[in-house]
Length: 235
Image 1 (cartoon, rainbow, N blue to C red):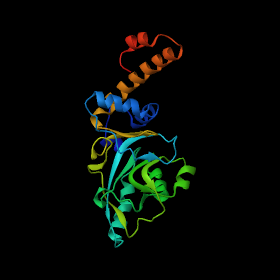
Image 2 (image 1 turned 120 degrees about the horizontal axis):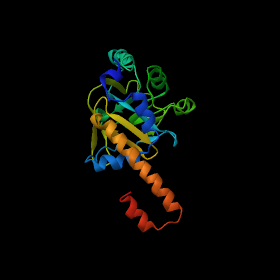
Image 3 (image 1 turned 135 degrees about the horizontal axis):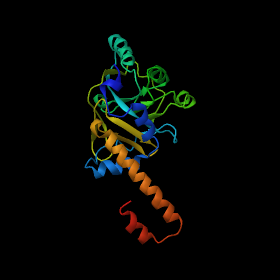
């Protein structure tokens, strides 16, 4: 499965990733909000495991379920998940069927190693991660709700992938995420850009950031702030 074929944005995925990573989530959110999509920010609890991590890419959605018996069929099946990750993107882990489990680590070093070999550029986990030291040494950006050392085996398992999922939201109980939606995260959190809006939101945000940069320089020069606001409008 090649995401670049299945999620054609009109712009190469690698280019989209690099351009988004030059922006910041606040500006992207402002554009989404202005376009009538205020509920695209994920839970404020989702933070990078290192403050300088920035993450951008298509969503590869993953749904998990409780697995207290260590079902071998589930463990075998989940290996095929990595065969489906064959282009640039971000696994996005949904723990909702465990009432947003807060007990185990849902992502760790081995997931990252397998994923990176398949084109994964980071991960967003609406739950926990572990092996953080390895992730940091590998400079692999992960955003999660918490960190702990508890193994998921006999407690929780990946179940299905590349289906619509729901993660906790900042302004809403959940945010719906579909395969191919675009994720962008930095120290302030993570926003979800619907697939059909990826390029337009990018271009509008780039324009906004350019305007902000020009206005910022004028503010810093000591010029009259009233005149600057008149010149640039709402910032």
